[in-house]
Image 1: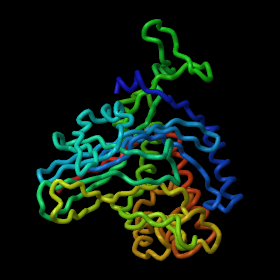
Image 2: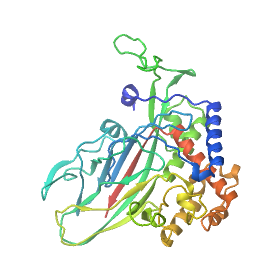
Image 3: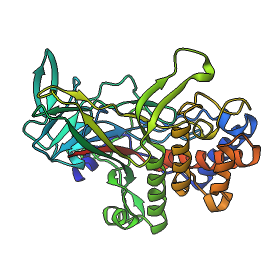
Image 4: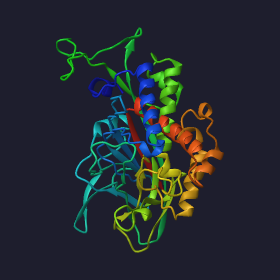
Length: 395
Protein backbone atom coordinates (compact mmCIF):
# COMPACT_ATOMS: atom_id res chain seq x y z
CA UNK A 1 0.00 0.00 0.00
CA UNK A 2 2.92 2.33 0.66
CA UNK A 3 4.14 1.85 -2.89
CA UNK A 4 0.80 2.99 -4.29
CA UNK A 5 0.71 5.89 -1.88
CA UNK A 6 4.00 7.23 -3.20
CA UNK A 7 3.43 6.54 -6.88
CA UNK A 8 -0.37 6.84 -7.21
CA UNK A 9 -1.88 9.55 -9.42
CA UNK A 10 -5.29 11.11 -10.00
CA UNK A 11 -5.66 12.15 -6.35
CA UNK A 12 -9.26 12.81 -5.48
CA UNK A 13 -10.27 16.19 -4.13
CA UNK A 14 -12.59 16.19 -1.13
CA UNK A 15 -16.25 16.84 -1.90
CA UNK A 16 -18.03 19.24 0.41
CA UNK A 17 -21.55 18.67 1.65
CA UNK A 18 -22.56 21.78 -0.28
CA UNK A 19 -21.18 20.39 -3.54
CA UNK A 20 -22.77 17.04 -2.93
CA UNK A 21 -26.16 18.63 -2.34
CA UNK A 22 -25.77 20.79 -5.42
CA UNK A 23 -24.92 17.76 -7.54
CA UNK A 24 -27.85 15.79 -6.22
CA UNK A 25 -30.18 18.74 -6.75
CA UNK A 26 -28.97 18.99 -10.32
CA UNK A 27 -29.55 15.27 -10.85
CA UNK A 28 -33.04 15.42 -9.39
CA UNK A 29 -33.91 18.46 -11.47
CA UNK A 30 -32.89 16.65 -14.63
CA UNK A 31 -34.88 13.62 -13.62
CA UNK A 32 -38.00 15.70 -13.08
CA UNK A 33 -37.56 17.54 -16.36
CA UNK A 34 -37.28 14.39 -18.44
CA UNK A 35 -39.32 11.94 -16.42
CA UNK A 36 -36.54 10.61 -14.20
CA UNK A 37 -35.14 7.48 -15.73
CA UNK A 38 -35.68 8.65 -19.28
CA UNK A 39 -33.55 11.72 -18.63
CA UNK A 40 -30.62 10.07 -16.99
CA UNK A 41 -27.43 10.51 -18.96
CA UNK A 42 -24.95 10.31 -16.18
CA UNK A 43 -21.51 9.03 -16.94
CA UNK A 44 -19.21 7.79 -14.24
CA UNK A 45 -15.90 7.61 -15.94
CA UNK A 46 -14.03 4.62 -14.70
CA UNK A 47 -10.87 4.39 -16.71
CA UNK A 48 -9.97 0.81 -16.93
CA UNK A 49 -7.41 -0.98 -18.96
CA UNK A 50 -7.37 -4.72 -19.06
CA UNK A 51 -10.55 -6.46 -18.29
CA UNK A 52 -10.67 -10.14 -18.90
CA UNK A 53 -11.37 -12.89 -16.53
CA UNK A 54 -11.06 -16.46 -15.73
CA UNK A 55 -10.90 -17.26 -12.10
CA UNK A 56 -9.96 -13.74 -12.37
CA UNK A 57 -9.46 -10.38 -10.95
CA UNK A 58 -10.24 -7.37 -13.07
CA UNK A 59 -8.92 -4.09 -11.88
CA UNK A 60 -10.60 -0.91 -13.03
CA UNK A 61 -8.90 2.37 -12.44
CA UNK A 62 -11.25 5.14 -13.20
CA UNK A 63 -12.03 8.77 -13.27
CA UNK A 64 -15.60 9.59 -12.43
CA UNK A 65 -17.36 12.75 -13.53
CA UNK A 66 -20.71 13.25 -11.83
CA UNK A 67 -22.84 16.17 -12.89
CA UNK A 68 -20.95 19.15 -11.46
CA UNK A 69 -18.40 16.84 -9.87
CA UNK A 70 -15.08 15.79 -11.35
CA UNK A 71 -13.88 12.92 -9.23
CA UNK A 72 -11.18 10.39 -10.03
CA UNK A 73 -11.51 6.64 -10.28
CA UNK A 74 -9.12 4.44 -12.15
CA UNK A 75 -9.32 0.95 -13.63
CA UNK A 76 -6.88 -1.54 -15.02
CA UNK A 77 -6.16 -5.26 -14.99
CA UNK A 78 -7.64 -8.54 -14.19
CA UNK A 79 -6.53 -11.88 -13.01
CA UNK A 80 -7.63 -15.44 -12.54
CA UNK A 81 -7.11 -18.27 -10.11
CA UNK A 82 -7.27 -21.98 -10.85
CA UNK A 83 -6.75 -24.68 -8.24
CA UNK A 84 -7.28 -27.92 -10.11
CA UNK A 85 -5.28 -30.52 -12.00
CA UNK A 86 -7.97 -31.10 -14.63
CA UNK A 87 -7.63 -27.84 -16.54
CA UNK A 88 -5.61 -24.72 -17.12
CA UNK A 89 -7.04 -21.25 -17.52
CA UNK A 90 -6.06 -18.85 -20.27
CA UNK A 91 -6.57 -15.38 -21.63
CA UNK A 92 -5.71 -13.44 -24.78
CA UNK A 93 -4.47 -9.93 -25.32
CA UNK A 94 -1.44 -7.78 -25.96
CA UNK A 95 -0.80 -6.29 -22.54
CA UNK A 96 -1.73 -6.19 -18.89
CA UNK A 97 -2.92 -2.76 -17.92
CA UNK A 98 -2.23 -1.34 -14.46
CA UNK A 99 -0.23 -4.41 -13.56
CA UNK A 100 1.48 -2.51 -10.74
CA UNK A 101 -1.85 -1.86 -9.06
CA UNK A 102 -3.02 -5.44 -9.45
CA UNK A 103 0.16 -6.75 -7.86
CA UNK A 104 -0.24 -4.34 -4.96
CA UNK A 105 -3.74 -5.73 -4.40
CA UNK A 106 -2.39 -9.28 -4.60
CA UNK A 107 1.26 -9.99 -5.46
CA UNK A 108 0.55 -13.68 -6.10
CA UNK A 109 -0.61 -13.17 -9.68
CA UNK A 110 1.55 -14.19 -12.63
CA UNK A 111 1.64 -12.93 -16.21
CA UNK A 112 1.25 -16.55 -17.30
CA UNK A 113 2.99 -18.52 -20.02
CA UNK A 114 2.84 -17.24 -23.58
CA UNK A 115 1.55 -20.27 -25.48
CA UNK A 116 0.55 -20.72 -29.13
CA UNK A 117 -2.38 -23.09 -29.62
CA UNK A 118 -3.60 -23.83 -33.16
CA UNK A 119 -1.88 -20.70 -34.40
CA UNK A 120 -3.41 -18.40 -31.77
CA UNK A 121 -1.50 -16.88 -28.87
CA UNK A 122 -2.75 -17.31 -25.30
CA UNK A 123 -1.38 -16.67 -21.84
CA UNK A 124 -2.00 -19.77 -19.76
CA UNK A 125 -1.83 -20.74 -16.10
CA UNK A 126 0.49 -23.66 -16.79
CA UNK A 127 2.88 -22.68 -13.98
CA UNK A 128 0.65 -20.69 -11.67
CA UNK A 129 -2.68 -20.82 -9.87
CA UNK A 130 -3.21 -17.08 -10.29
CA UNK A 131 -3.20 -15.56 -13.75
CA UNK A 132 -3.43 -11.91 -14.71
CA UNK A 133 -5.86 -11.67 -17.59
CA UNK A 134 -5.54 -9.55 -20.69
CA UNK A 135 -8.47 -7.62 -21.99
CA UNK A 136 -8.30 -5.45 -25.07
CA UNK A 137 -11.22 -3.06 -24.86
CA UNK A 138 -12.38 -0.12 -26.89
CA UNK A 139 -13.30 1.78 -23.73
CA UNK A 140 -10.93 4.31 -22.25
CA UNK A 141 -13.49 5.02 -19.55
CA UNK A 142 -16.45 3.10 -18.18
CA UNK A 143 -19.46 3.94 -16.10
CA UNK A 144 -23.25 3.56 -16.02
CA UNK A 145 -24.45 2.31 -19.39
CA UNK A 146 -21.19 0.59 -20.33
CA UNK A 147 -20.78 -3.14 -20.88
CA UNK A 148 -18.45 -5.72 -22.34
CA UNK A 149 -17.28 -9.31 -22.42
CA UNK A 150 -14.60 -11.04 -20.36
CA UNK A 151 -11.91 -13.09 -22.07
CA UNK A 152 -12.18 -16.36 -20.22
CA UNK A 153 -10.88 -19.74 -21.45
CA UNK A 154 -10.65 -23.21 -19.95
CA UNK A 155 -8.09 -25.65 -21.39
CA UNK A 156 -8.96 -29.24 -20.35
CA UNK A 157 -6.04 -31.53 -19.62
CA UNK A 158 -8.01 -34.58 -20.76
CA UNK A 159 -10.81 -35.44 -23.18
CA UNK A 160 -13.46 -35.95 -20.53
CA UNK A 161 -16.51 -33.71 -20.40
CA UNK A 162 -16.31 -31.64 -17.24
CA UNK A 163 -17.98 -28.85 -15.35
CA UNK A 164 -16.29 -25.85 -13.78
CA UNK A 165 -17.81 -23.51 -11.23
CA UNK A 166 -17.19 -19.79 -11.39
CA UNK A 167 -17.88 -17.29 -8.65
CA UNK A 168 -17.69 -13.55 -9.22
CA UNK A 169 -16.88 -10.83 -6.74
CA UNK A 170 -16.61 -7.06 -7.17
CA UNK A 171 -13.87 -5.59 -4.95
CA UNK A 172 -14.03 -1.79 -4.53
CA UNK A 173 -11.15 0.46 -3.52
CA UNK A 174 -11.11 4.03 -2.27
CA UNK A 175 -8.32 6.52 -2.91
CA UNK A 176 -8.22 8.52 0.30
CA UNK A 177 -6.30 11.71 0.96
CA UNK A 178 -3.77 11.30 3.74
CA UNK A 179 -4.10 13.60 6.73
CA UNK A 180 -1.98 14.28 9.78
CA UNK A 181 -3.52 16.08 12.74
CA UNK A 182 -6.51 16.83 10.56
CA UNK A 183 -4.46 18.55 7.86
CA UNK A 184 -3.81 17.25 4.30
CA UNK A 185 -0.40 15.81 3.44
CA UNK A 186 0.94 16.86 0.03
CA UNK A 187 3.30 15.13 -2.38
CA UNK A 188 6.90 16.32 -2.30
CA UNK A 189 9.92 15.84 -4.51
CA UNK A 190 12.10 13.16 -2.85
CA UNK A 191 15.28 14.98 -3.89
CA UNK A 192 14.45 18.61 -3.13
CA UNK A 193 11.63 18.31 -0.64
CA UNK A 194 9.63 20.85 -2.63
CA UNK A 195 5.91 20.37 -3.11
CA UNK A 196 4.92 18.75 -6.41
CA UNK A 197 2.45 20.94 -8.26
CA UNK A 198 -0.30 19.93 -10.66
CA UNK A 199 0.74 20.72 -14.24
CA UNK A 200 -2.66 22.17 -15.08
CA UNK A 201 -3.80 23.96 -11.93
CA UNK A 202 -0.47 24.72 -10.29
CA UNK A 203 -1.92 23.47 -6.99
CA UNK A 204 -0.22 21.14 -4.54
CA UNK A 205 -1.14 17.47 -5.05
CA UNK A 206 -2.55 15.66 -2.02
CA UNK A 207 -0.88 12.43 -0.94
CA UNK A 208 -3.30 9.52 -1.19
CA UNK A 209 -3.54 5.90 -0.15
CA UNK A 210 -5.52 3.21 -1.95
CA UNK A 211 -7.50 0.99 0.39
CA UNK A 212 -9.83 -1.92 -0.26
CA UNK A 213 -13.30 -1.09 1.02
CA UNK A 214 -14.54 -4.19 2.81
CA UNK A 215 -15.74 -2.90 6.17
CA UNK A 216 -15.63 0.31 8.17
CA UNK A 217 -13.35 -1.31 10.74
CA UNK A 218 -10.84 -2.46 8.13
CA UNK A 219 -10.93 0.93 6.45
CA UNK A 220 -10.19 2.70 9.73
CA UNK A 221 -7.21 0.43 10.29
CA UNK A 222 -5.71 1.52 6.96
CA UNK A 223 -6.75 5.18 7.17
CA UNK A 224 -7.02 5.97 10.88
CA UNK A 225 -7.54 9.68 10.24
CA UNK A 226 -11.05 9.00 8.93
CA UNK A 227 -14.07 9.35 11.18
CA UNK A 228 -16.39 6.39 11.64
CA UNK A 229 -19.05 8.22 9.62
CA UNK A 230 -16.63 8.88 6.75
CA UNK A 231 -15.58 5.21 6.70
CA UNK A 232 -19.22 4.10 6.59
CA UNK A 233 -19.86 6.41 3.63
CA UNK A 234 -17.16 4.56 1.67
CA UNK A 235 -18.59 1.20 2.75
CA UNK A 236 -22.08 2.18 1.58
CA UNK A 237 -20.78 3.32 -1.81
CA UNK A 238 -18.84 0.07 -2.22
CA UNK A 239 -22.02 -1.92 -1.56
CA UNK A 240 -23.87 0.07 -4.23
CA UNK A 241 -21.10 -0.65 -6.74
CA UNK A 242 -21.22 -4.38 -6.04
CA UNK A 243 -24.94 -4.41 -6.83
CA UNK A 244 -24.78 -2.15 -9.89
CA UNK A 245 -22.23 -4.27 -11.77
CA UNK A 246 -24.21 -7.17 -13.23
CA UNK A 247 -23.13 -10.33 -15.07
CA UNK A 248 -24.70 -12.35 -17.87
CA UNK A 249 -24.14 -15.56 -19.78
CA UNK A 250 -25.19 -14.57 -23.30
CA UNK A 251 -25.13 -11.50 -25.50
CA UNK A 252 -28.37 -10.03 -26.81
CA UNK A 253 -29.19 -8.10 -29.98
CA UNK A 254 -28.84 -4.33 -30.13
CA UNK A 255 -28.26 -3.90 -33.86
CA UNK A 256 -30.84 -5.74 -36.00
CA UNK A 257 -34.58 -6.13 -36.20
CA UNK A 258 -37.25 -3.82 -34.84
CA UNK A 259 -36.08 -1.45 -32.10
CA UNK A 260 -38.78 -2.81 -29.80
CA UNK A 261 -37.21 -6.29 -29.91
CA UNK A 262 -33.64 -5.28 -29.09
CA UNK A 263 -31.98 -5.98 -25.75
CA UNK A 264 -28.51 -6.28 -24.23
CA UNK A 265 -28.16 -9.70 -22.59
CA UNK A 266 -29.79 -12.90 -21.41
CA UNK A 267 -29.08 -15.40 -18.64
CA UNK A 268 -28.44 -12.97 -15.78
CA UNK A 269 -26.11 -14.37 -13.11
CA UNK A 270 -27.80 -12.60 -10.24
CA UNK A 271 -26.27 -14.85 -7.57
CA UNK A 272 -22.77 -14.33 -9.03
CA UNK A 273 -22.18 -18.05 -9.53
CA UNK A 274 -21.93 -19.97 -12.79
CA UNK A 275 -21.56 -23.61 -13.75
CA UNK A 276 -19.99 -23.99 -17.19
CA UNK A 277 -19.95 -27.29 -19.09
CA UNK A 278 -16.82 -28.10 -21.07
CA UNK A 279 -17.67 -30.62 -23.82
CA UNK A 280 -15.71 -33.85 -24.23
CA UNK A 281 -12.83 -34.25 -26.69
CA UNK A 282 -11.27 -30.84 -26.06
CA UNK A 283 -7.97 -31.85 -24.50
CA UNK A 284 -5.45 -28.98 -24.74
CA UNK A 285 -7.97 -26.82 -26.62
CA UNK A 286 -9.05 -23.42 -25.23
CA UNK A 287 -12.81 -23.39 -24.67
CA UNK A 288 -14.24 -19.94 -24.08
CA UNK A 289 -16.69 -19.48 -21.22
CA UNK A 290 -19.15 -16.73 -22.23
CA UNK A 291 -19.24 -14.06 -19.56
CA UNK A 292 -20.52 -10.51 -19.97
CA UNK A 293 -20.80 -7.55 -17.63
CA UNK A 294 -22.92 -4.43 -17.62
CA UNK A 295 -23.44 -1.39 -15.43
CA UNK A 296 -27.09 -0.55 -16.20
CA UNK A 297 -27.53 3.13 -16.85
CA UNK A 298 -31.15 3.54 -15.83
CA UNK A 299 -33.68 1.95 -13.55
CA UNK A 300 -36.11 1.67 -16.45
CA UNK A 301 -33.79 -0.64 -18.36
CA UNK A 302 -33.92 -3.03 -15.42
CA UNK A 303 -37.49 -2.66 -14.29
CA UNK A 304 -39.96 -1.52 -16.92
CA UNK A 305 -41.66 -4.34 -18.87
CA UNK A 306 -41.77 -2.32 -22.10
CA UNK A 307 -41.15 1.12 -23.57
CA UNK A 308 -44.77 1.94 -24.33
CA UNK A 309 -45.07 4.69 -21.72
CA UNK A 310 -42.04 6.49 -23.15
CA UNK A 311 -40.19 6.39 -19.86
CA UNK A 312 -37.49 3.84 -20.64
CA UNK A 313 -34.30 5.26 -22.05
CA UNK A 314 -32.29 2.78 -24.09
CA UNK A 315 -32.82 -0.90 -24.71
CA UNK A 316 -33.83 -3.18 -21.83
CA UNK A 317 -31.10 -5.18 -20.11
CA UNK A 318 -32.91 -8.43 -20.96
CA UNK A 319 -35.59 -8.81 -23.62
CA UNK A 320 -39.13 -7.76 -22.77
CA UNK A 321 -40.21 -11.26 -23.82
CA UNK A 322 -37.63 -12.98 -21.58
CA UNK A 323 -39.92 -13.77 -18.66
CA UNK A 324 -37.31 -15.89 -16.89
CA UNK A 325 -34.61 -13.24 -17.13
CA UNK A 326 -36.98 -10.45 -16.13
CA UNK A 327 -38.19 -12.43 -13.11
CA UNK A 328 -34.57 -13.03 -12.03
CA UNK A 329 -33.74 -9.32 -12.25
CA UNK A 330 -36.90 -8.33 -10.36
CA UNK A 331 -36.02 -10.76 -7.58
CA UNK A 332 -32.44 -9.45 -7.58
CA UNK A 333 -33.68 -5.89 -7.01
CA UNK A 334 -35.89 -7.10 -4.16
CA UNK A 335 -33.17 -9.23 -2.56
CA UNK A 336 -30.55 -6.45 -2.87
CA UNK A 337 -32.98 -3.64 -2.12
CA UNK A 338 -30.64 -1.77 0.23
CA UNK A 339 -27.72 -1.75 -2.18
CA UNK A 340 -29.42 -1.41 -5.56
CA UNK A 341 -31.05 1.73 -4.14
CA UNK A 342 -29.73 4.42 -1.81
CA UNK A 343 -31.75 6.11 0.96
CA UNK A 344 -34.25 3.27 1.05
CA UNK A 345 -35.80 4.30 4.37
CA UNK A 346 -35.86 8.01 3.57
CA UNK A 347 -37.50 7.47 0.21
CA UNK A 348 -39.80 4.73 1.45
CA UNK A 349 -38.58 2.21 -1.12
CA UNK A 350 -39.97 -1.30 -0.70
CA UNK A 351 -40.53 -4.55 -2.57
CA UNK A 352 -44.10 -3.59 -3.42
CA UNK A 353 -42.81 -0.67 -5.50
CA UNK A 354 -40.58 -3.02 -7.47
CA UNK A 355 -43.46 -5.42 -8.06
CA UNK A 356 -45.60 -2.53 -9.27
CA UNK A 357 -43.04 -1.01 -11.65
CA UNK A 358 -41.96 -4.33 -13.15
CA UNK A 359 -45.60 -4.91 -14.10
CA UNK A 360 -46.01 -1.53 -15.80
CA UNK A 361 -45.07 2.14 -15.55
CA UNK A 362 -46.60 4.09 -12.68
CA UNK A 363 -45.25 7.58 -12.11
CA UNK A 364 -44.84 7.83 -8.34
CA UNK A 365 -43.15 4.47 -7.57
CA UNK A 366 -41.06 4.67 -10.73
CA UNK A 367 -39.75 8.14 -9.91
CA UNK A 368 -39.02 7.08 -6.33
CA UNK A 369 -37.09 3.99 -7.41
CA UNK A 370 -35.23 5.99 -10.05
CA UNK A 371 -34.19 8.54 -7.45
CA UNK A 372 -32.84 5.78 -5.21
CA UNK A 373 -30.97 4.14 -8.08
CA UNK A 374 -29.46 7.44 -9.20
CA UNK A 375 -28.40 8.38 -5.68
CA UNK A 376 -26.57 5.06 -5.38
CA UNK A 377 -24.66 5.80 -8.58
CA UNK A 378 -23.86 9.28 -7.30
CA UNK A 379 -22.42 7.81 -4.11
CA UNK A 380 -20.24 5.46 -6.16
CA UNK A 381 -18.92 8.34 -8.23
CA UNK A 382 -18.03 10.37 -5.17
CA UNK A 383 -16.34 7.68 -3.10
CA UNK A 384 -15.00 4.74 -5.12
CA UNK A 385 -11.71 5.26 -6.92
CA UNK A 386 -10.90 1.75 -8.09
CA UNK A 387 -12.46 -1.65 -8.32
CA UNK A 388 -11.53 -5.16 -9.32
CA UNK A 389 -13.70 -8.03 -10.45
CA UNK A 390 -12.51 -11.34 -9.11
CA UNK A 391 -13.61 -14.53 -10.83
CA UNK A 392 -12.64 -17.79 -9.20
CA UNK A 393 -12.79 -21.04 -11.15
CA UNK A 394 -13.02 -24.35 -9.30
CA UNK A 395 -14.08 -27.90 -10.06
